[in-house]
Image 1 (spheres, helix red, strand yellow):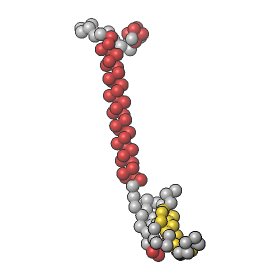
Image 2 (cartoon, rainbow, N blue to C red; image 1 turned 90 degrees about the horizontal axis):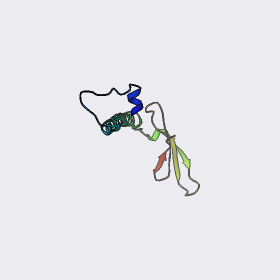
Image 3 (cartoon, rainbow, N blue to C red; image 1 turned 60 degrees about the horizontal axis):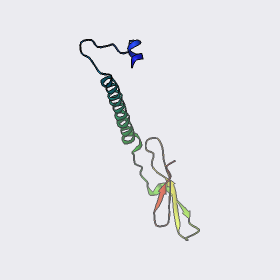
Image 4 (cartoon, rainbow, N blue to C red; image 1 turned 135 degrees about the vertical axis):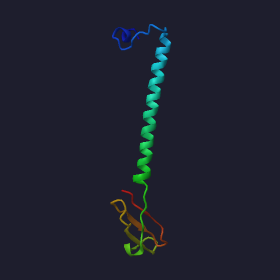
Length: 105
């Protein structure tokens, strides 16, 4: 703190005496408020990105699926691709009961 006063980073207050503890507490609270505001802004930006960009849906139609023999269970499965949404598709593999998963990458 004396170095800040010497380098004129903090101007000494002549009309009202301020304790060193008040200056230090003010600095801590100031950094905390600025950090909290930046963190909130980043959180809101991340939330908006997820809601607007990442969250989307694809349709899967029977005409987009091709038969795929399942050697292990003796049931035929299906393989295909989802509809085009937000510039991409996903590969889908279904088992004989129509249950399966879509690849995300």
